[in-house]
Image (cartoon, rainbow, N blue to C red; front, side):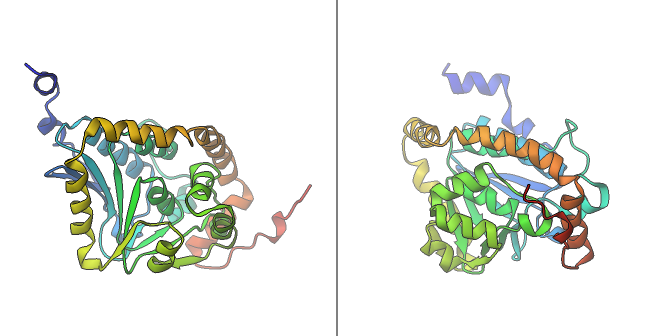
Length: 282
């Protein structure tokens, strides 16, 4: 009996894949695990439950011997992911109830890096804020011609001072990363390709097929070699996880401050945020 069949006896993936999801969908097609954020009515923004389900999905993909790569995408044609659900935050002061009682976005980031299989972001629309971070952390990104990219944290009273900024600077360079964060501009798929933010741009109707073809190509290669290579690439930037942990703690505190809540409240009310009372350089 080989190790894989032994695992199958103890760990039936078919049973596990019957896991019911509300905020995402999870399917395995050939060698690809396709994880889709399924909240199109909120532009695929994530709440705590969404993050919990994404963590479960990535763990399923890690354990499934059939899966050689993961495709992360969004439902519909408008948005890949627009980050944390700011409307939820404005309503309740947090991102809603979670399985373990905490918002585990940092855990998701780490899992996407640690899973020993390539993660392919298939960016089908807007990738903004925390959704932009998800595609940045992915190993490669394939974008629809209609995709748009950018950060929105300083506009809505939020930030990612961990992988979302430090690793982004490795991808596009310090100057461009600071521009992306400080000015909250949006960039087209063509501009993203030009700055090295994505690997390829394709017509919208070819996006998922292109992502699947990348999975099929990597599935023909040595999985152990790919695993070592991913871990080697990560080793160069793993120290950023420490910044990420600290940043998430800071964000927990900042998010419920008057300044942080002003950003969320203004977004929910569809009015410009007034951050002037919070200017303090001391």
